[in-house]
Length: 257
Image (cartoon, rainbow, N blue to C red; front, side, top):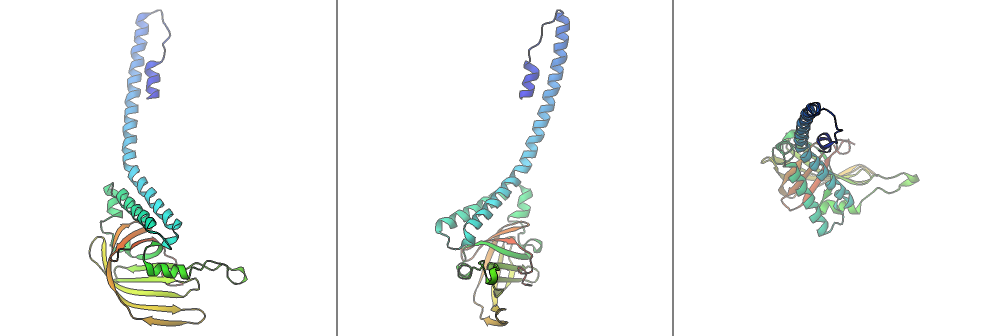
């Protein structure tokens, strides 16, 4: 608009010929009109581009906010009720941002989030409200200096899902390499919901010696994948827990380390 104003409102020097002045004014007005037309087209194009890009930008911002909160809350260890409410609101904001355009909805929320191409993966825990997992992460954190100044890796939790094989393994990999794994059989019930039933649990010791302790499986339930994209998944389950995980195809995440 400033440019357009400069074209139409610029002072004109007086000229002895009124006819000649009027002719140049007419030509100037024609150029100004053409310029306004180009500006209008450019503005319309920018508005269209903004409409397309803004929802995706808001979705990415909401996603980064969620991951930041997960890190600040230490994956959920010791979180308060107020912090849980903040995480729930952040997930709702992400789902809402993704649902603003059909282009995002078809990939992120509610439409076939349980397809093998989306759900089958190894997922590393970013945040959870599930008490049993948080207990293990808190009591066996790792990540401190070991012998000879070596830094021990931190204890991590994973979900290994294979929709085609109908399998789910919840694994906690301790800082020393030992694992606690709960195996389940799963069934896709809809575009978001997956039911599961525990089939076995085991403690796999690798240090100081190799030994596997099998434990009886107990439990069944479901979880809804309310958001899934290329790198992040958010789920709510039948116990009222919230889970945030990120895709991780490392050997440890896949149980191959």
